[in-house]
Image (tube, rainbow, N blue to C red; front, side, top):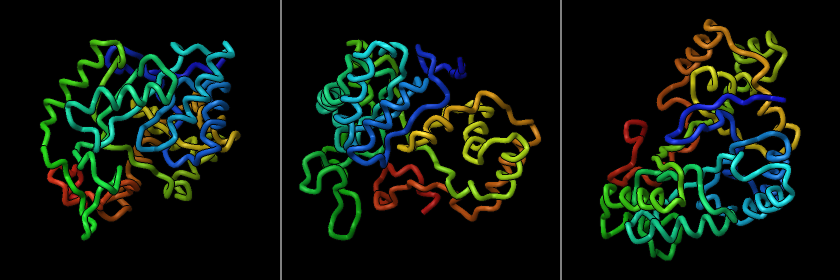
Length: 267
């Protein structure tokens, strides 16, 4: 049986490879989650703003009800979206996520981005003005007040751990890199597996996203090899070939004018 390494996440052990559900289309994300859980995935990454938590929840219910996989064996993450970053909206937002996911608790609940956005704007989850700039929450809530409400969720048993997310980078453009392909050939694995193993060997958790059954299984099969220190260094050096701001693929630059935008140096 494959044993997936874990890293300490607060009071929990978080498997270092999980399934991402961002940009997974309705009608396929549930099947992807079901396939992942039935093929030894123990970490599923979700978020309200992905607009698919109901379908993910149906998959959770189906798999957990079947009894092969137990809820307590799976590390589930979700995230508080920017339009819910008011103290009085934190609890209801978490409750909605738990309802949609058909869960009693989350293993990790993250503030998705360190930016509060207008919570009742007609443009919904991405409130932008006529110039395309983010519309912040006019009440300008403090992060300390929002965090205090997150802590209450832990006290109430609704979340085991809480944290902050600035979003992970994706490295899809690296799949055709000659260094990556050379290392993949040396280990008889795919370039994607090399990039996932690189994060594992660096001590990071990584959330590859796929709805393709064969690739879901492939992405988890990274425990059978390790990269040498020289290979890790070669992969780390690849970033030097990328002009600023590097290879971030999700910078939500239309929020760049927000006072709390975390990547101003990259604009």
